[in-house]
Length: 332
Image (tube, rainbow, N blue to C red):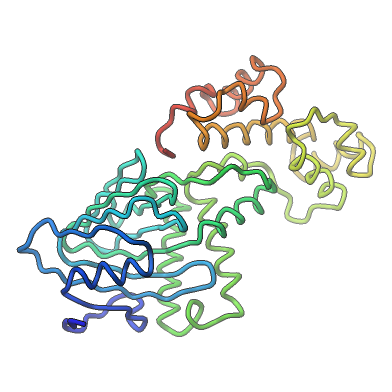
């Protein structure tokens, strides 16, 4: 291995490689992520590649630089989401149809089922969070209460102008510092599961994605048993023609008492919650399955028996028609 002068960098004690050999860098990075094309754009740039990597249970923290201006073409990542947080410099990121110029104020999120193409400019250094695709999708299902999510995609650009995104990025940097200090990733097996659960839950809340509308449904931190049983029914059978009586019967209470519980805990009626779930799921389908499902079928799958009323309710909730949502390109 062609070693270069030592340089302090995030996660430095977890050095994976440091080299001036492009083929060696491509081979090792490919083993950790996926096979890809790596090409220099200017032979006069100083190629000075380095990766530091610390694995967790379902994700890993990484520091990566190439020094020179390089083109990286991995195609589809397939098995993992990758969040890239520039510490220095800029990179041009294309994931599917979305393109973003990434910088220390704009991170990027790569969706595994969309083709990726990147150009890291000379001097670009990034902190990367690699998250197992299955794990993140299961977290989304757990948090929404829906087992039939058709998939998950994020908006590519993660601007730190949004407070939640800025907080999430700061937390990742803090986790890298903690790993350097001997805590959390690479060290603390007891708390690592909790750290990863919080990290993915906060990512889903911070970065716009195809289940955001479902996550915006009201929650109760200490839901009584009656409410839990009612929500389970709604989440499992919202596409069916449920009535207030159906939900109350499954919850083991009267319709009147169920309305009181919903109003107290969630600030709305059971039927309003049911309708909100149907609309949020319809938006999820429109964002993930656009071009594959006709809008009429989306209405049916989300429990809307009357197409015209569905379109009107959808516009009232999201400020746009179902067809306008289906045309969006930020998740494609």
